[in-house]
Length: 221
View 1: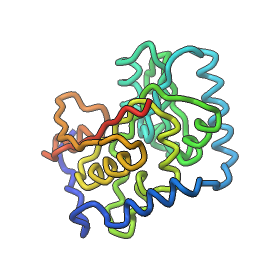
View 2: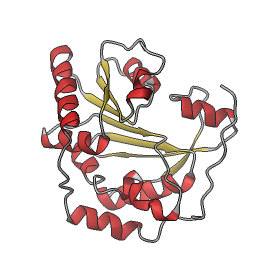
View 3: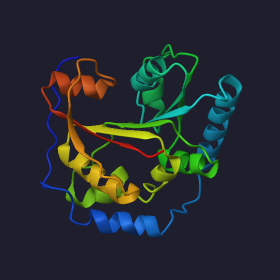
View 4: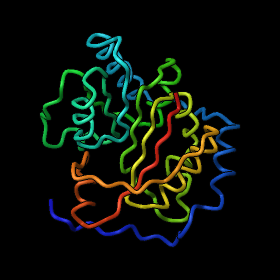
């Protein structure tokens, strides 16, 4: 893949000053938006698949899986786990398919805002939780659209698991680390990340374009 990806441009040069207050507000006031029917149906189908295939397997959630590269890689890396890849775009999930997925993985089209809450409502505890190269929403006014600024963010703590988030925009990861520190009570650090084995098309493209990569990790079990 050629390296033609531009660096993220933003007027924001540091973590948003409103982040802590926003996270605290979301912690104090649970998100109660009604669930969409298609998300309820998608969740029911994917959990049925899990229970038929490997009901005792620890669960991994690949949140925002795109075309499914990372879901497949995670399933291969953790063969004793069951990996659910979720993306809101049916076009991305279907692009280039059929993607040869291992038996311990499934892709599903759903809105993560509902899917995360449905997992919590079912009492699901994740073994691992990946959020790889989410939309950075780089405008200053877009804080509430970033996952750590969204009202659904506190559900991540309830889901538990070893959480990892990656981005090529360091401010996103700095904010994510601050929000996870506030949410979990653990100190979450920002790390520079290097790899010669990219897990997603975005990661491959960013590496080919010479971008620095960043991540934060925390164990929420």
